Amino acid sequence: MSGRSAVRSSSKLLRCLASFLLLYAVSLSSATVRSEDDQGPRPLRTISLLELDQLLPSGTHLLINRGAIESFLVALEGTPPDWPTVYGRGHHDPEHDERLFNLNRARDAAREENPTLTWRIAFMWVGEVSHFDAETRSYAIAVGPEFTRTSWGVVRFKPEEVPSNLRVRPDKYLADWIDWSLLRHKSVQVSLVMVGTLIPTESVIYDFSHEKEGLGLIMPVVRVEQVEILLVQPPASGAR
Image (cartoon, rainbow, N blue to C red; front, side, top):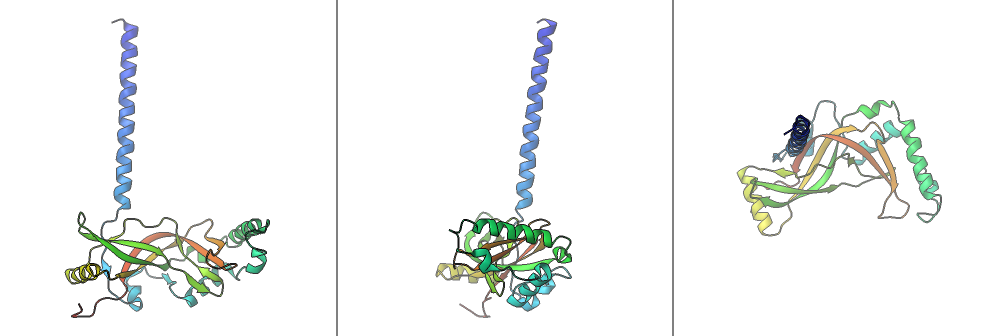
């Protein structure tokens, strides 16, 4: 083999080796991300909402009822939007989308540097035990948003990233009760309490409800840091 051929072969080998190492690094990184996203089975809490503070970071604002949510919106936004003007003649109004866009942009600019943006808040979603996962020996949880009617419109807190693959591993007593309930096609409802802070930009999204014409929809967007799962109606002692 000539010297020039040897150099070409050596360069080709180095390029192949570099490609292999790059692919290995990417696959390793992806595996790490997946493992971090999967938090594993969580405890199933049976405490009441009145005792919830003991699970939350100090200073967390608990936004799980109409009054607390409205106070939060006043601190963050000042006054509700003029929904009738924004809605106009509805979705078929050619200027409807532009008015909604302008509302969102104006509100984004107005809340800049508002200290409420840094509040740690807790809000609720609804959930239900869906099935037992034999591989992880835990119960999978199906979740969905909670809609709260307020004087501002309907409020739906929106996680920046919806927690996925939520599972709980209850103690034996609760596990037996859940198995008994699922076997009889009884719903086992849970509440998801999510804790976090508003994202820096587009902290609140304004839209209209798809359920009722002209009804304003307000979606605070939260970067979630903590999730707690509470059993809505724990079984009474000796139940079944």
